[in-house]
Image (tube, rainbow, N blue to C red; front, side, top):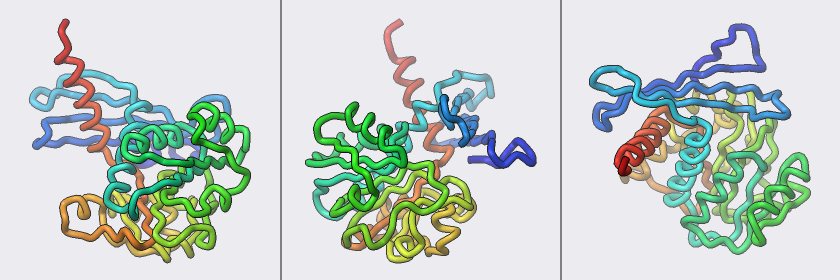
Length: 267
């Protein structure tokens, strides 16, 4: 997320995420508002403006909320493909909002989980999501119960202090951490961060914005792109954490895919 645009206001942010890629022939920016105190409406709202790179003329404005939800979950899924230990059977989701749902939907494209446990700081939220997602899903009362023997964990909470502890997870678990997007917020206990091999989407972004990394001072082993291109190892047998903050190029490419598909449809 870009710098806060509301000077002096700590509760509300407006971020701008511009990107140009010559290789991908895309020019776009995402405008995203973050109002963490919202109760009856989403905390995040976004639009993505796409321009023709050759002329700078606007091409389209897209729903940034949908694209953000899907590309974030897709990024976690790609990371999991390279970091998960074996064939995962138990998925734990901490949180019950948009990202919790989008991660479940994405992960079910690749993995056949036998059990999905959902925890939320308000039990009714976890129960509502479990009922919506189906019979494999169960709402639980405590984080420790959710993550016991879990193969994959998704942390997608609004927590500003750690909710996931080292003593609750098994060796070799893979954690996708997508909440705690401010430098003074964290979802994961520092002991767990330092016991894990940590991967990020962007090292530059993580060192500026990820409280989980900044507070714990956990070293970053690699960007997930380095694992994908073979220059760094995916340490599947260790506890691994993929800390995702999101990158503008992800939004831009996702938006371009949508527009290219739309414009290829018969009129």
